[in-house]
Image (cartoon, rainbow, N blue to C red; front, top):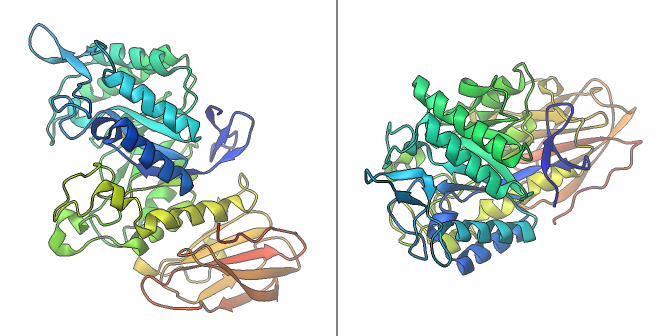
Length: 439
C-alpha cells in the first residue's frame, strides 16, 4: 500500500508511483468506538466489496467518546489529578486497550487496501458550541496529543489526517488548537501523510484554513438540511480558489437521514445521494464520500431517528451504487479532467441542474431528472463523437450513436422525472476507449 500524495496539478490525489486515486469514501465516525473486532471486519470487508477505498473515522468519538467505553470496556484517555480527561494521557494500560483496538482496525483496513481518514478528535472536544464534549483541548496539549498520534501511525501508509470535526473555528483559541494538533502530527509522522480539515455543516474547510501551510486539500460538508443542496456551487468556489488545492464533498446528505434532521420532513433516498455525488465530482471534486445515517453512528438500537441496524444499513441501495461513479471516472484519462459547463446550452437550475466535465477527448454530462441535454459540440477532439447513456443506478451503458462534432446536438434521456438520472458519455470516435460495464 502506498502513501497518498497531491498531484502536481493540485487538482487530484495520486499514489506515490503517480497512479491516480479516486477517493470513494464511507462515513463511519463511530467505528473505533462502537464495533468489536469481528464487527469491524464485517463492515470493512463489505465496504471493500462495494469498492470503497476510504473510511472516515474519529479517534475521540462524538457520541460521548471519552466517557462511554468501547466494545471491550476501554476508554481512550486517562484523567489527570484534577479529574479531567487529559489528551496527554492516552490509556495504554492492560491487555487490548483502546488504542490497540484502533491499531487493529487500521490494520484490517490496510489489508483490504482501504485508507483511514482519521480525525484525532470530534470538534466538541475543543469547541463545545453544541454536543456532549467535554472540552479537553488547549494549544499545549493538542500539540502533545498530535505528536503522539503522528509518531504512533507514521509508518501506517493508509492514513489521511483530518483536523476539525464538525465544528466552526469561532475564536482564536480554536485556531490555536487546530494548528497545534496539525503541527504535532507533522512532527510525529515526519510529514508522511496528507492532511485536511472537516468543517461544520453547509461550509468548507476553505472558510477557515485554506491558506494554512498544513492543509493539503479542502473538505466540504454540504450537509443534511434540504433536498437538492447545490454542492456543485460549493465545489466550484473551492475549485476556483488560489492557491489551488484539491476539493471533495466529504459529508453530503446521508442516505435515510431525516431531511433537516426532522423525520416528519421525510428522509433522503438513493437518488438524493447519487445526485450529490455526480454533481460534486463533475463540478471538479477529486472524489466523493457517501454516508448512511445508521452507519456513521454504528446504530445498534434503531428507532425513528436512526432507522436501521448498521449491519442492515450497509446493504442500502445508494451505498451499492456509489461504485458506479468511481467506475465511470476511472474509465477515462483521469488527471486531465476539468469541469466545463460550456458543454451545455442550458444547465438548468435546482433539482434539474446539469453538471458537465471533460478531458481532452471525452465528456460526461449528468442530468439528475432526465432533462434533455443540449450539447455545444466541438469541446473535445475528433471530427465525430460516439455517444452512450450511462445509468448511475446500475452502471449499465447503452449505445446512442455516432455524431458530427460540431454545432448543437440534443440528446433525449431514456426516462424522465425525479430519480431518473442519466450520464451522457461523449467520446472522440477516433480514440479507442473501454466502455465501462456493470462491475
